[in-house]
Amino acid sequence: MIAHARISNFILTLPPLGAHLTRENVHVGKTRREFTPEYKDEAVKLVINTGRAVATVARELGINEASLG
Image (cartoon, rainbow, N blue to C red; front, side, top):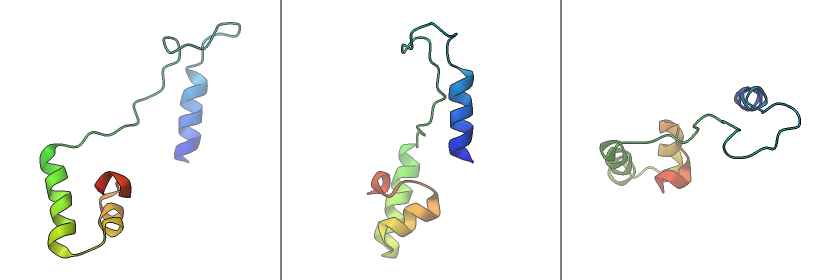
């Protein structure tokens, strides 16, 4: 469902037919989330202090395992 929404948003932001696709005329929503340093510290502490796997903590927090790693 999320992928469908992203595709729909992309299609709605396409320039008129005949126009060239460039960075300036295709607007795709911001998908990258930003985390505060405090949030990052707490996430790392969860892994270190609880002994749980990075993958487990990442899944619980709803973030990518590679980001937490």
